[in-house]
Amino acid sequence: MKVIKFLQLTLENIKSHRDLTVNFGEETQITGDNGKGKSTIPQSIPFALYNMDAFGSKLDPTPINYDADITKASLLLEVDGKQLLLSRSLKKGKSQCYVNEVPTSATKFSELVSDLFDKDLFLSLYNPNYFFTLHWEKQRAMLLQYISAPLKKEVLKHVAEEQAKHLEPLLKKHSIEDLKELHKDKKKTLDKKYIAAQSKTKTLQEQLEHHAPTVPLESLNAELKPLLKQRKELDEIHDSASSVNGRINVLNNQINNLNKERDSMKDDWAVLKNEQPEGNCRVCKQPLQDEALEAARDDIKQRTDNFKSAFNDVIAQRTKLQEELKTLEYIDVSEQRAKLSDLQSQIEPIEKEIAKHEEYEYYLKQVEQAKTEEKECLESLNESIFILDSIKDYKAKEAELQGEKVQALFTTLSVRLFKQNKGDGEIKPDFEIEMDGKPYSKLSLSETIRAGLELSDVLSEQSELITPVFIDNAESITRFKEPIGQLITCRVVAGQELNVKAVGE
Image (cartoon, rainbow, N blue to C red):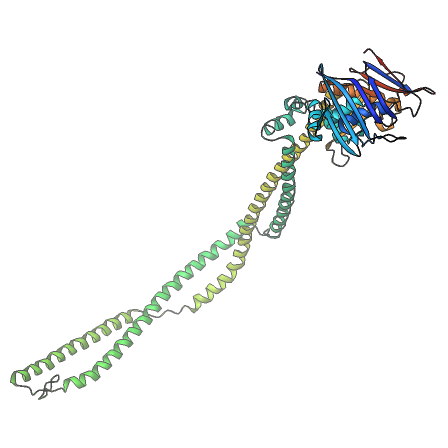
């Protein structure tokens, strides 16, 4: 516990005080009529430390009704038994700081004071009304910095068992706020996905109903079976006829080609059979000798024999094809085609009806798959909703437990740390201090002093810092709990000059 004591305050040309020295005791009573400079004494202390008044506002300490070259306030402190003299002066508008009467830069001076105590904490302890001039977020932060939040396992014990079961493993990976943002985003995505899944299921269901067959599949198959059998038989007949007729056409084409080849060979034969050996070589045009002439005759004979052989092969091939053609008879399939056409006209509507059953089965599978996807999406969505609701309950219970810890520090004051949004029920940070059901802003002067003193005691105990406490307008409060540290009171006494009395020095 750090203890700060005021030993002596020296004022030089501050407001109405030309030269004033105040020695402090455990209680320092400052009395006098209005306008006698009572409040200037305690207001000069934060001026010396921070160049401001006890409410954190800019302070002009210069004399009111006379001129002076210098304005100066010096505060002799005792910090954990060690004395320290801190001073601040103004000369022609220029500020100068001193530590143990040694001129010091404003920066070093501020650092030294900050090392002693936090400014907002000191002013909240010194002036019980200062705390309430701060923004509620600052007030809340000041109070909670000394009070640890409930542990996760402690909060989980107070939520529903199923909620704790889901949250516990998740909170090992994420903070409660990160988990909340994660599932808010997931729920947003799943909301859209679920709507799309519902729409898909509805569309497929409508298509399924549209493609619903009217004739039972068993009846269609029973009706189609004999027709397919007849078509198969006719197809076999048609295929057989087509094979025969095709062969006839092939044979006729081949015979015609052989006839053409034969006729062409007859023309070639007329030339060949009348050919005689010439007196000159057909190649070099030299006159043929006896042996050469004989060779020419042999060549003609050889070519004649080869030609006859080739001609006979053509005749033989044609004869063979003609013999095969005589064994085949052209089949008229026009009747079969007509029957097949009639059968197909009966089969097609039946097959279309059967196709409806196949389409129906397809859409039925699509609908089932869509329903499965919709169900899975809904389960994921419900899980995120459940987790978000669990987080909301967790935070509400956390707020309740933290509120209980804070509330346990006070005796007459009530502290609100959270509020619940009307729209979504979310627990949001908030801060308000009440006394007897009334917010601080509605309290009377004496009530604000008592509230400030109680809060000052709590902050002092939690921060382990004891400072003097200053009560202005002390005449307005008849009873209050004595602070832990020194007490400085200012009280109006009609018709009395300024009087400073130190008790328990």
